[in-house]
Amino acid sequence: MTTSTPPPAAAPDAAPGRRRGMVATASAMAAATPEDRNRVVDLLRAVSILVVVLGHWLVAGIQVTGDGDVVNRDVLGMAPWLHPATWAIQVMPIFFLVGGYANGLSWRSARSRGTTYGGWLRARLRRLALPVVPLMVFWAAFAPLMAWAGLGSDYLRIATTAALVPTWFLAAYVVVVAVAPGALVLWERFGWASVVGGVALAALVDVVSITTDQLLLGFLNYLVVWGTIHQLGYAWLDGALAGVARRALLLVTGLVVLVLLTTVGPYAVSMVGVEGYGINNQLPTRVTLVFLGMLQTGVVLLLEPALRRLASHHGVWTATILVNGRIMTLYLWHLTAMGVVIAASLALGGLGLRLDPLTSQWWTSRPLWLLVLVVTTLGMAAVAGRFEQAGRDDRPAPAAWRPVLAVVGMAASLGAMAYVGIVDGDTVNWWLPLAPAAIVLLTGVARPPRVPGRA
Image (cartoon, rainbow, N blue to C red; front, side, top):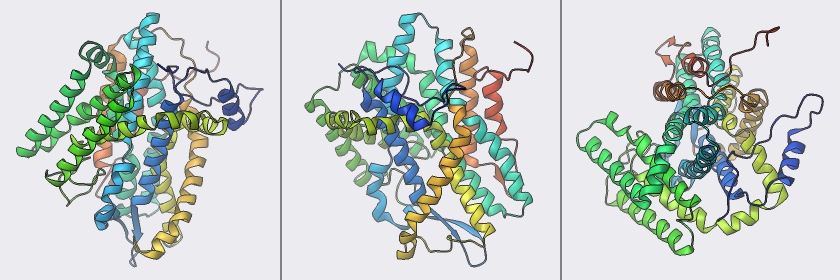
């Protein structure tokens, strides 16, 4: 069985006095990569996030009307013929799949070294949580600044809600990471029964939530659905998905059930949230995404030999290291970059945003739209990306309750902001983004700032 080193490949900043460009650093890391590393895990992680970023940018139907108002056209709602394509662009299941692989390997390594759960969880949270801090501080300052500058509440509501949407994933993922050691025990003891049990529980949550019209109950599936796909990562790690037959069976099972649920069943075909075409599969997460995860897992694992050959090329592997080195920053900031571009457009009288979505002119403008967003996002990542390189943490392992409290606080605050945004009517609740940033600091996930002159 091919193994992988526990942490994801990253491109750290060079030491002072020996600073090199990130590309050169990543190239050197690529050359030094151990032969037994499963590069497919890192490749899939990088590609899945890039697909999510590209998908968000392409389905954005932001338009400035003749009156100067900002509206968010629902591109998927306007074009139901695009809905089947979401089975390919909704790739968050792949991220949870590789998360299961990496977290299983990481926890086993920590367990063998005698690392405590509290120490392990804090280390995992540092990589996930620290990039959130500059984003939250940015919006705590940028939103009221834009309100003071005279931008309308419609723009602020659209911009803040869209920009904070990525935090729903982080809210779900930190919870899944927190329960990963226990979930691994379930996998080691019960094997595939733990996956079947997760599917059954997700289905039960849906049945009760939908039949009783209890939307909040459906949010339990943020843990159950993504946690079940995370179990597939353990199966991959342990070789339980080795062989073409098993991978093909997983693919066919996911495809057949997904087709039934979206044709005979009540669920929407779109795996990205869209209203008016059946039960929304994403808000809250529904059981359909478990079967999408099975389908996608079967596909990528059938392609694993080809992906392994692709990742063995030095250039591809170097690019993979570069993306993984800033993966959380790119994910968290890509919609904020779009908000800044929209603000700049409004300052220029709606330049580039007066086209009707899905028209030929709108499609023709997409390459330039993407180029502007790429440049803006990379600029932001250059500034905020240093928070993703947490550095060595030599503090004693904390009591388990501290990182667990951080998980609960982050999940609650990030999830709430992703759902409601920070603009209520004409009121900008600038302090809301500071809550998750404060939680990261107060629970000790982040090292407190050092006072000059003190050791």
